[in-house]
Length: 226
Image 1: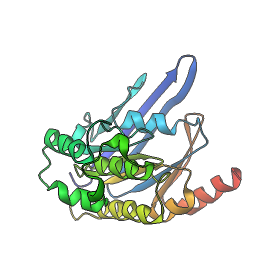
Image 2: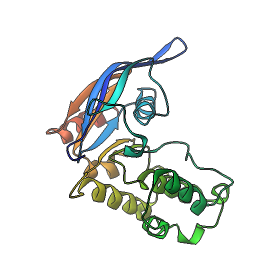
Image 3: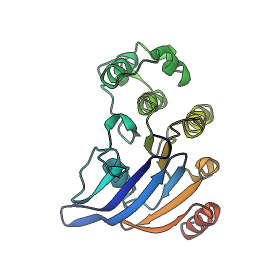
Image 4: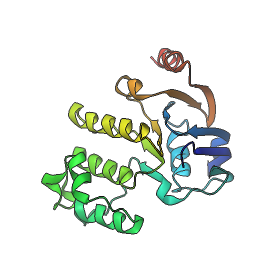
């Protein structure tokens, strides 16, 4: 799957009379880390939910090399953890591992996200930071080729952010099957060094997109939103 491209083709989405995405087209390449920037309501979360398969567009499509994405290719973590609150951390990960055919021992995933101490606690009993790390463990569990993260650092302290940073670097730099990571964020200061690309959404359309001039795009966005 090396060199795989994720394509978003003319997707539109409205909630009632309010359009959120307007024929948006973009592609994401293996090995990239893209920051998705924009004001609240710009369409970032809706776009990521469509890319991850959690929401259907009203029109347009998403595809991996021209075909419908295979669920195991995609990891997602958003505002809701997508974990079963009455199950323990380990039970949640074990369930996904079984469904996805993951053979790596769960102990490795628990260790990566420093969740060993709460492995037998229900999700509903966790602190917000622990819950965020559990959601990230779920997103990275299947070693997906495309990872969509919506404000992943909002509940992470500096140490936990380092775990996320290391996980992103590892999956992007894999010798084979390097992943593409797309991050919707307002935490620009911490996320900026991780990125190779920046995209700005405005009213459901792409207002700026640049790989080579990432810092310029981010600087312009930050200046406009001071």
